[in-house]
Length: 215
Image 1 (cartoon, rainbow, N blue to C red):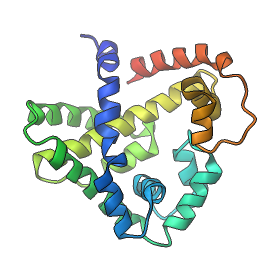
Image 2 (cartoon, helix red, strand yellow):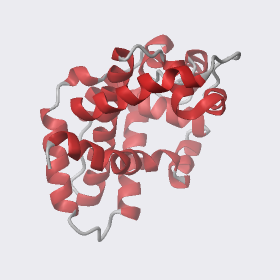
Image 3 (cartoon, helix red, strand yellow):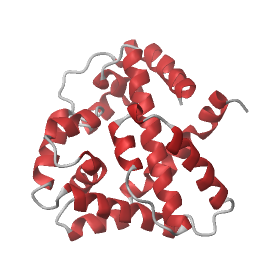
Image 4 (spheres, helix red, strand yellow):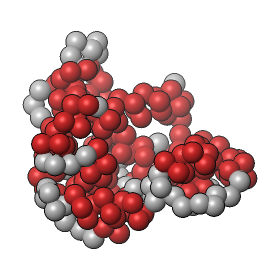
């Protein structure tokens, strides 16, 4: 299997395994400990590795969500939890998801070894969230470590995909419309009216292939 075929074969798995903890009920419960709802803990927790920065900087790291929404979420959340503490809390949520879901997973040690090689050797220029999360200390236990490395790997792939979309000439809203339609755009609070999504799908398909090649 060549690297591009590897990328195609693992795309869905990386997306799921690296991000499932974000929508897990246990993760929501940890956020509630700090007075944060799902959006608040997601927005602050995932972006916390950017530091105590301006909301517009955080919005730039979440290109598929309407920037006004990201800025509002960040501004409200940092009043309840400092970014440094949010990183620790979000990492804990990720690790605990690993304990609950990856224990007894055949080949987990080998999987963690190989995915660690990928994230350790990739250039930090692929994305600020990727570079930031790669610097967060990993736990000693296998299940927690595996979950966190998969999360970092997902951030790497996400950063690569954003660059591929931009290279294909797509703006963030256009990419959302091409992949998820008007319903997706509304879900991420992009204001209407929306252009016809069909005009963006050829470029979207090309960007997906570019993502596989770059990754």
